[in-house]
Image (cartoon, rainbow, N blue to C red):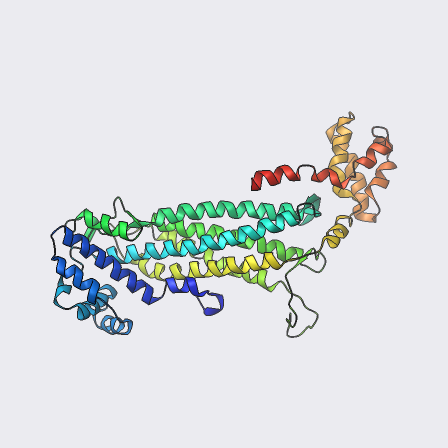
Amino acid sequence: MIPRYSRPEMVKIWDPETKFQIWFEIEAHALDAMADLGVVPKAAAKAVWERGKFDIDRIDEIEREVKHDVIAFLTNVSENVGEEARFLHQGMTSSDVGDTCFNIQLMRAADILLADLDGLLKVLKDRAFEHKDTICIGRSHGIHAEPTTFGLKMAKFYAEFSRSRARLVAAQREISTCAISGAIGTFANVDPKVEAHVADKMGLTPEPISTQIIPRDRHAQFFATLGVIASSVENIAIEVRHLQRTEVLEVEEFFSKGQKGSSAMPHKRNPILSENLTGLARIVRSAVTPALENVALWHERDISHSSVERNIGPDATITLDFALSRLTGVIKNLMVYPENMLKNLSKLGGVIHSQRVLLALTQAGVSREDAYSIVQASAMRVWKDGGQLLDYLKKDKKVTGAISDTDLEALFDMGYHLKHVDTIFKRVFD
């Protein structure tokens, strides 16, 4: 990803320096295990740890000739180790190193993303409790439906990202496997104990059966999980964008002193961060289909997945890390306007209470079909002519014949809709 949408800690995971260091550790730990088994001299393993080093420019130089990155790496390490380096990579294949490294990088990326999610969840919880009783209109199809609270909106997102966190924990566990099984994965030239040793040292578990590669269904689940998280990021971003529209203006992204909204129109205050998050979510999701397509490979392996993963590994994790951090800032600094929420609640003359009147009529003995028609007729007058639903209903003899004015007025109590807010909060946060 470009620096504009990158954060240093996640970028470092995908640096060549980090990758080659992981490769070196895999090779060195494997050599330790082989030395313990008597396959190679212990002095060789010691020499690799003591003198083993690499130079990225030299690796690139060698690769330009040999056209193979693992061979280039091993050649460069051997140049520094000396004669004992001939025991490196005994019985191993390139995928043993590359696949195990890739999984380690994804594990480390997941650690950062989990920390990102924890930060976001804290902010969502704080805003949810801050606005637990801040009443606002709920919308379906973009149209006024019934009252809710802004705190419930935040609680919904908190629950959504809590599920995403659990999914990422599972996906990280799924990807935390190691393969040191040699060509075709039969362990013909490398003892399974070597794999177990490397796995233990690198914080992994041995892959039960790896052919020549680690099965890509594991990676498909990982990237699919990132895609779901990205969609949840967009879910909040879309809500902010809608609520910040001039005609609504119930919330607004923080607009700092000196910030400019438009090169042409000085009055503009645009939801640029939320719009940016919507776009970044698309980038993360774009990794999902290629990851799914990587599952089906020829026989015991091919490398059609390799070029894909060299792109989607860094791009998806770096982008999502940046997006989660940006979203946390948006929610933390979000300007909330309760007075505009109340203003919007009253725009349609109380039609948001139509269901309560409908139910009261049915309780009074009116059929549901008739009750619906009665209430809808008055509600449509509000849409067409303005005015208050309650006033129209009081003039309808079909209504007043079933419900007294006092009881009818009670049906328009806004607080009625908040009576189970505490129950919902306990479900989400306890």
